Image (cartoon, rainbow, N blue to C red):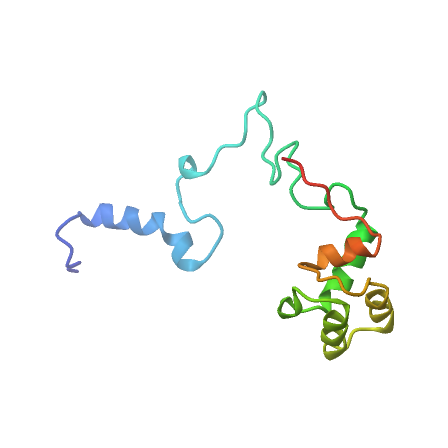
Length: 136
């Protein structure tokens, strides 16, 4: 039987085929040799974690409760970025086009007249609600 490969001997070809057997067949592993598997962390080393200790990214911003985050998100969900900057009437018209529920429209009605809001957070603060506090 002629293999057509001049780089390796038939024995090396068989070994290489055995190494990738798991990849080719889609079974677990992928490498036949045990030395190719990753070693677990040592006894004196910390275990792997998706989020390192002290990493406070994600979750609830400082200065707000989860309920406030949800309410502000719900309030801003019906105001498109194209409506900003805008006053109370522009924000309400945009929210109505986006079929905002009555409680969101009632919140917009509470906004002061004659004030242009640059962001949803500015409008939210004008209603007396909390926004996140920045840490620099």
